Image (cartoon, rainbow, N blue to C red):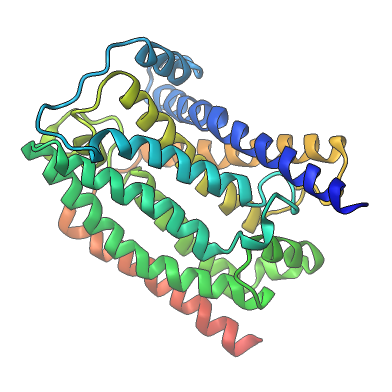
Length: 320
């Protein structure tokens, strides 16, 4: 393969990954809502309802608070852009995405955190009580989840001797036994807790709540409307889908494209969608039997994630 072929393959698969995350994220949200509704004895909305909602929002008038600064309209754009860049360089469909050498786990984490941070600033920028309350809660959860996430990255990188995500996936394919190693299992359990917290799912936050005093994420975006709200909705769905894609490829990377052929890319896309859909269905089913934790109990949950990640590092050090 020539260098031009590698560049063309990386660019085309990265564009495919971004498109899959953008559309698949909304479909995943619709699937999880439908599963919850069916388990609760309701018919529920169609799986494609989030796509229809976003289309409707793009057709509405753009309304913004009079006292808001440039941060308010800028935050949704940054949220979409950071998730799109992270999706383009991460090994989702193929182990050779564009700029894969720069797809360090630390880079992906801070790309996603930059969008979340700006969205929290936008919640305070609106000047409302609920926006400030939601932003302060979201930042608190992020500050508690970040130490666990950093130690999780350290635990995941020990077996591959690298924090580069494509390299971790390739090393897992070369040595499948590392998937069931204590270090990997502890790290992935910690990562799953962090994903739940960062995605605003139960028991950390209730994405379907309409009670203002219990809102976290929804309180931050109460002042958004029209196309701005559509961008926030798409960005949040993309972020959750991307985090779950990274999780499933670290847990079970089989099916991801290792050769540069259209058939391999198609198999990688289908297998990724099936794995993420399965995890989403399990998460939605588990949420039916959960209650939202009180805000003051969340440090205990995230401290547990930190302990799991620490156990992953210790076991990886001892057993290596």
